[in-house]
Length: 569
Image (cartoon, rainbow, N blue to C red; front, side, top):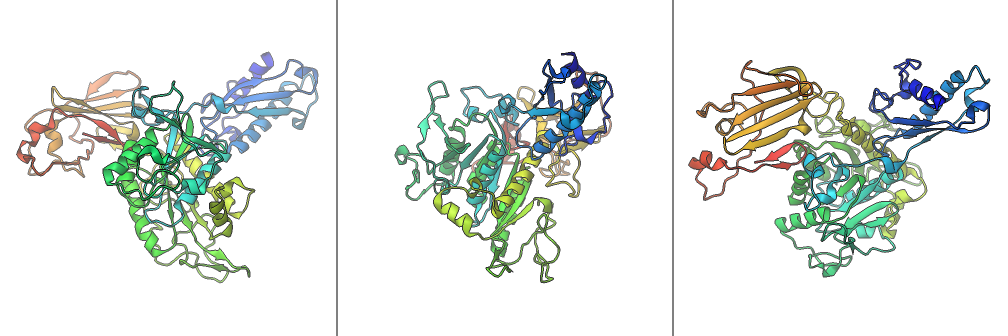
């Protein structure tokens, strides 16, 4: 026990035997120490009692990362092994003559000890009676979208899910293309029956289909006797109006007993309609993956999708250009849909024939919502991919090949960004963009100097009796609270938050500002300047509404969380 404590103290830098700058004990993605003073992933060390007697035994280090979806876990475990070997040699130098390679070290990770929880506070605090209870233990939601049909989006979504599962993650795949579900064709489980959940689970729930470690659900798996148009593997045309499609999506999403998942991959239908808005507004999407072809027709719609998700606060973590090229028997590379419109990771500036790899009119190479080139991937036209789709077995489940290597890199890129987002850091796909910072989605306020507030943790409350709104922002140093009167809110420009010249506010409410620093620290009134947080307001009125009464009609009001950092009043 004494030897274990000494080794653990050394690993946690408690006696400064290991320099804080030792990069081997730093997470290569997050950039923080794995020790107790940093991420605190090294939880315990087990050394057999007979070890210091020179007998051959294995030292066990228990590592507990927040997720198995970490592309550098193997590198981390290897580094920990090296450090433990060196430290043991030093600790036992008075008793034994050892070399680091003489010490056997096993770094163990127990996935069952890794807890999952939604990053949406509203979903996380739901009760078993809530319709969103099934989403409570899903850490990340990742949407795969294309906005143009026929570009291979469902193939990308399915193989990405299986590749993430191969990394050790607990993964679910939900086919939300209710108009033309394709998951039952791409993945053909031995038992495709959707069954009701056990009695102890919330009433009305169904169990997802488990296939090779991935939990699946699609309208195509649902019994055709369900009454939902288009359900079943051989269902007819899904004739659904917008509201009906939204309800079907909500039922598939919230009516499935997903359990604990590191990530749920959402295969969205083409377009930017009701299904996409329902998903973006009802979930806190961690990010999205865009799929296109080099064709100008496909890119015209992809631009709309990238902008829509970006404006809703959802980062496009990666872009896959499918059908980018094919290689003929002679080894030449051909581009039937035109050359790539974005430069991908590992691409040379010039082809073998001296021509540029990308088109000269690439419309989104420098778009501020586009991911960096390291998160752009080109997938060739492949007979292997087509055969796997026809057979109902994702090609990522087969032996490694050229196509699965692309998906391995895609999964690494997506998982690395999810890890950064989980620690409130800017995803690598967005780093280097103009205006980006080391922390994702932050806002600064003139009244509170040198503080960057995390937008996703913003809270909005309402006091109907006094007709006021309360906005709370949080940062590492403390919190900021702003009380805004209803009339004041109405007088501001919906986009800029500035007071409009033709508007006047006579309520006199909303002038109180309270700044709190530290954990429960002292507070003081602040009357420096008149800067206020920018509030985006979307006005909605029916044709029969009298806009002259909008002040009186504002209260009583109800607030609900929408999307990553939005509220609906």
